[in-house]
Picture (spheres, rainbow, N blue to C red):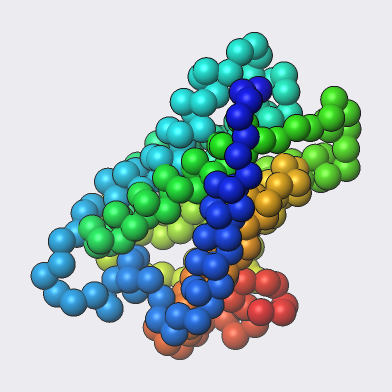
Length: 254
């Protein structure tokens, strides 16, 4: 571990994530990309969805990966490096795999820039805490918080990836037609992919037992939860035969 932890960046960064998440709850309209990109004024600069996702997700992978490359010893030694590797694993998939598979609509450049800024701040915050501030006991690997948190992380990642693949299969290259997703957790909720990622980051917050991870999990719950709500509303308006028993995010509840 590297020395020199300063708590002020940790507290300030965590507060930024929490406040930003809370602000999302007061937004009546969804962020203008994907299904909701038609809200944007015509003439705005857009990027292909694959390029947009790659660029905005890259900082969250590159920042911790650079720190991990400097860490001495085995990657599977200290809990801090293992937890940071989990963070990298999520964003490796989002940056290099999901971005190549996505068939979404062109992405507004202004939102890409906001995404790059957010991912840079969050990537630095999570990396800074685990690399300079975190001090876990030797028995952390056997702690229930770590075990349950890692289980939830991989469970959520599996749900997220499976749901993204299900959505990917709904549309052929070049198509802009929307269809009702079926199978997996889409049987119960409209935002199965969002639910998976929320579970993932809640598990990560539990495994790291840290303020930055908790703040990021809260932001994810707010942002992705509202995204699921808006997707659900979109489906209900578009499809008369949309399953009435299907909820937005939480099966049988919401």
